[in-house]
Length: 505
Image 1 (tube, rainbow, N blue to C red):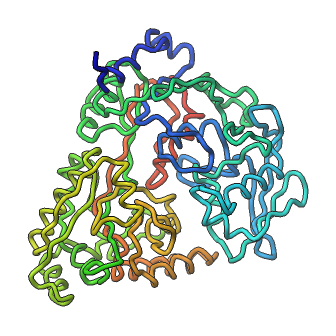
Image 2: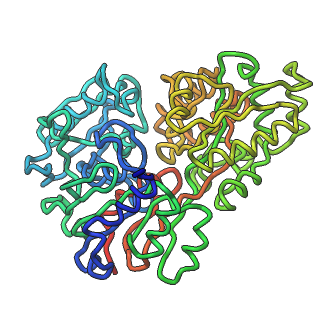
Image 3: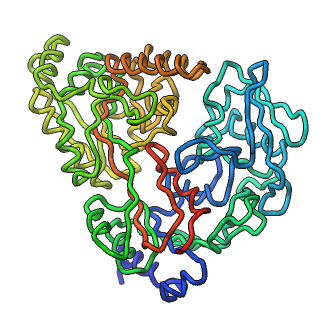
């Protein structure tokens, strides 16, 4: 007998909790949540995707997090400030304990920072944390961080869902966190069970008694589970299904535009080591076609850097610096010595429709200016491996900034950092990188705004990436699910933290 992937997914629906009627499940205070991927692991400092991040945000906590308005708020720390010598000082909240009952102390914070910054660390935020020269503990509830260079954005580092504070005596594979929920069981590849932590430091939270995560890797099965009432809430509502959620009187959709699609380049060889060629490509693509083809209209064109509209950093003119202009694209190619175009390859993946569909639209528009691209569509793991190793000419990628501050774009713009599948490979963009560093070290808000506008101007010329389209990221849920917030812009992938505030109305 052959076991199919669909059979495995359907078998997941037969878990004991699923036999309980939805009304009884809600009465028990257990939220049933459709997760898009089973977490590869739940290590607190390693990036393993947004689905894993959702679970980690509920079982762990850091010094700060984000409010429903996207503003930093205290978590394990109830205050933070710069002292007279330029060091960041965090004061710990009283009454915080880990899941084993041990109090959260400054020593735990110091130990966690040292693990993230360690020489052999594989932590997502390792590069940033190596900018901390030393960690001082004036008293058990105070941490003083002395940085090698001024770091205006340091508090936001602790808002990332890969920088949790863990009990310093944790076993390597058994991290002990201080989040609002505890992991009490899991079926590998299928489900995870969380229960409310009764000693959580916020009185009255979490409001739920528990969360049952069930994995539906197939987006259509995930949506079907929501429609049928098998789950109360799902992440990553398929774009083609968003209208159906909105039309269903029993359901509601909470969506924001934050993640985006872009083109990456291999800058180690011609012709993509020439910024004129990269700029030509930036002007060659009609973004409206991507929004329609890949996202069913659930998004909007991105003709500049992914700076969120409505933030102080947004500039309307700069936001359209790579407007659709095929005549300009051809002129730039001719200026670079490629008047007749050239042959190339475009790496994407067949595993996710949005990547494949975006690549096909880009291929079509590049052909119109003389660039003939062979599409390469391997599975996702191969796409990641090839992207990290620079085994491509151009590549399609989908990503989100770390936060809505332009410094959050460092992960995708700073091509001097170690290679990753989500950043162009060794593209020379010195002015862009220098402006990022300058903005990070400036504390005056008005000056930072001007620095980041200059950063955008530099990037429009150096083209470390080409923005293509903002895409909607939606959570679908039963209308009786209350209190959850899809955080604004780039923070949408951190929205799982607000499940501590979620309840059934």
